[in-house]
Image 1 (cartoon, one colour):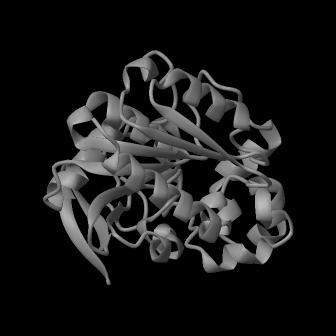
Image 2: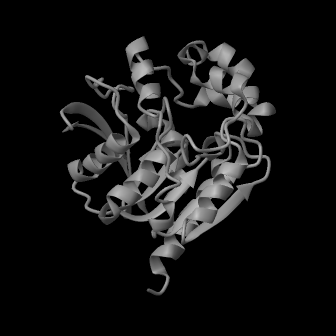
Length: 267
């Protein structure tokens, strides 16, 4: 059962979506991701109490008075856990959400048991995707017309969407509500890198990435996995940037298996 609730976090009215029972698993979405984006994945995460939320300025969460840095987004994510009465959780971050997850594990290690990083990179010190693709990905108008998005989905996101672009119609991909929200979301992500601290992040981590990601090239995942002391890299052949959604039946069980095994491994 999916339950939406509203909490005041860092002074912002925030939508939080909780589903299932079991080990708490915090889900942190990407640049324009709202909490319902994870709904197609939930059936494959049986045994977990998933906690998703709309980030500041996106979906049903208030727009802040100034852009949130990755550091503050991590603090906000910790506030989401506190709001639903969870002290410590496994954390799954996708794309920008993966950057927030890395910062959360570093700055608030007491909040994070295990970590899953999907289609993400180490921040500004990274190998960028193609500039033309990044410009299309970051443009909010790309998500306004679902027909146009379907026509361009394969080129922007890669993976299964190259052959099945119609899949985007079933997902909750929405543009920011205003130009200001768009500017704030982009501005807050600049200048951050996890490379200086990844060696000190000791939580068991699964880094999962597709080899057909035009936005965040695979080499970034290899770099993250190499820098983390306790990481496993899972490369999804033919997987694109949205592999968690377009290949949920294949990817989500790998994630659930990793989290379960990591939870029961000897100390």
